[in-house]
Amino acid sequence: MTTTTTIQITITTTPAALVTEFTSPPKYTTIPLLAPTPTQIRLKVLYTGLHRLVRSRASGKHYSVKTTPHVPGVDGIGLDPTTNRRVYFLCIAAPTGSFAEYVNVEREDVFPIPHSAADNDDDKEEEEEEEDNNGATIAAIMNPAMSSWLALTTRVQAPPLTTLQQQQQQQQQQQQQLDSGGRGGEGGGFKVLILGATGTSGLAAVQVCKALGASFIIGAGRNVHALESAKSLGMHEAITLPPSPDSPSPPPPQSPSPSSPSLYHRAANVDIVLDYIWGPPSSAALSSILSHRNTIPSQQPLQWIEIGSLGGAEMSLPGAALRSANVRFAGCGPGSWSAAEMRREMGRCVDAVVNGGFGMVGGQKVRVEGLADVERVWGEEDGRRVVFRP
Image (cartoon, rainbow, N blue to C red; front, side, top):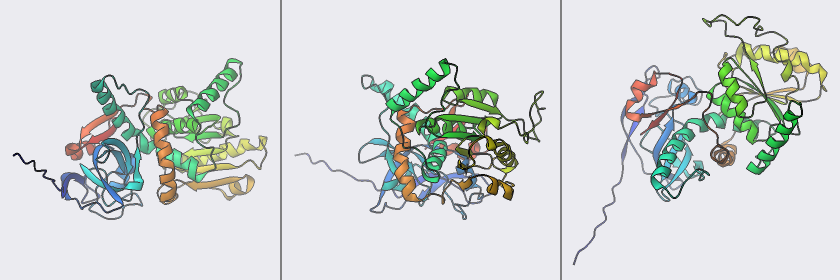
C-alpha cells in the first residue's frame, strides 16, 4: 500500500530590493516575510513598475516615506494563489513594497484583471505570451493612469465611467463634427487641459479623460512627436510649449514665450486643468488662461488639480487670480484622497485600462528587467518605462 504525503512549505523570507540609505540605490537582498494577517493575502509578484513615485519615495523626497529600511514599489501584477489568476495590487500602505518576490497585501487592495478581448483560448502558448506582454504593460501604465483617474473621480466632480458602447457612439459623433468642419468634441462632457501631456502620466491622462467622458481635451507639452501621438488617443488640440530656460536647444523660430498671453487662449473655457508641471510654467499658464476667460461667464468654475511638480515645487499665485475668477485649487496624491475612495475607484480604473485598450504610445516602450539587477538599473534612464520581474 502506497501512502502519499503532502509537504507544505512555509515561506518565511523573500528576495527583495531594500533601501538602507536614501542617498544610495536599493540593493538586492533577502528580507523576512511574516505570515499574512486574516485581512491580508500573500501574492507572488509577477511585474512591478519603477514609477517616478517609487523613485521619489526611495530617495526620501516623498512625504509618504520618512524612514529606512524601505522596500520600494507601490503596485504590481501578482498571482493570486487561491484562484491562480492574475491580479493588480496596491501596496502604498503595506508593510513592504512590491519590489519583492512575495508580498502580503490587504485583500481590499487586490483587483482582478479582466480578460481582454485579445485573449485567444485556442492557442494557450500564444495566450500566455500575450498575457506576459499585457502584464508588463499594465504594470507600467496603471500607476500613471491612476494619478489622473483619482484626480477626476475624487478631487473634482467628474462624469461616471462610460461604457465602451457609449464611448464608440461619442467618438462617432465627434468624427461627424470634424467631417462637417467643426472642431469636434465640444459636447456635454467636461473640457480639460492637461499640462505635461507628453510624459507617460500625461499620455495616460488623455486616455483616462476620454474614458471618463471628456468632450474636449487639450494637451500641452514640449515633445511635438508625443503631442501628435496623443491626438491618436483622443486629444483634440495641442499646445506646444517652448523649451525650458536651461535647455541646450534654442527655441524654434517665432516660438512664443512661456508667459505669452496668447499661448493658452484655446484653453480659456476649460473646466478642469490636470497639472503635472506646476512651478513657474503653471503660473504662466494660469495667467494666460484667466486673461482670456472674460469671454465666458465668470461663474464657470475652473478646477485646477496639481498632480506633479516637474516644473518646480512652488507656484506663484496672485491673490487677484482667486478674486477675479471662480478658480479652485486642489492636489491629488496619497493623503488627498482616502483609502476608501482609492479602493472604490481602482476596480473601475483597472477595467478601463484593460478593456479600453490603454497602452504605451508616442515611441514609449516597456523595458523588463530582473529584480536582481535593481542596483544597476536604478540609475539608468533611456526613455523606456522600467518594469521589474522578480
